Amino acid sequence: MKRFVFDVAALIARVTLGVILVAHGWQKWQSGLEATAQQFTRTGVPLPELAAAFTIAAEVIGGILLIIGFLVRLAALAWFVVGLGAIAFVHGPNGMFVSEGGWEFVAALSALCLLLVGTGGGRFGIDGLIHGAWSRRRERRRLDREGIPADGTGSVPRQDAATRGDLTREDMSDIDSMFTDDPAKRRPPNR
Figure 1 (tube, helix red, strand yellow):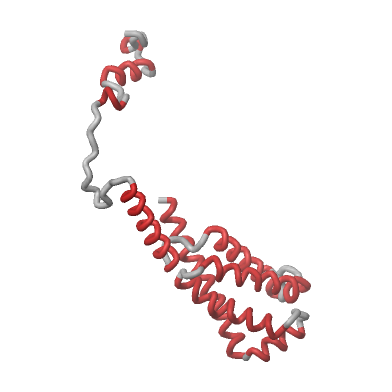
Figure 2 (cartoon, rainbow, N blue to C red):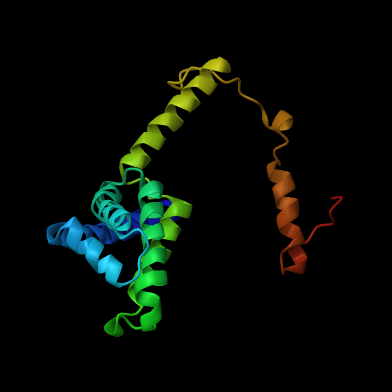
């Protein structure tokens, strides 16, 4: 159940982040690479043309990858680098609050990216499907090496209770009597 909850939460976070990144990247793309590079120059970003191209790619392509759940860790890492640069060169000097051009929004997106780098995007995406297929293939190979049919038709010898070390009904009754509050039902452990 915990794994399912994580997968749903990762899906929601990944898609939300992806939509935000695509929207911001598309806005920069429509303004043009040169206009974005000029804006980066005004704010003191080093190598503004390269930084603008990397930022647009990380936002548009990375956002799409996050939405579909493919190469999630790489896409999140790329935008984490963009976010660190945005905090250091653009938003950091403006204080914390986004209403004053501060770093809070960029820091929240960067923290989410860092979380996705660490945990991945969950099973509900292309990465999850690929990982699941590889895991099933690896398990089939292991079963083949051990001579166990992968379809579950192999017979497993049954074991009786004595060889498994199971407790008998009398053993369980003795254990129950040790924990009862009724003194009449108590029996000594050695019977």
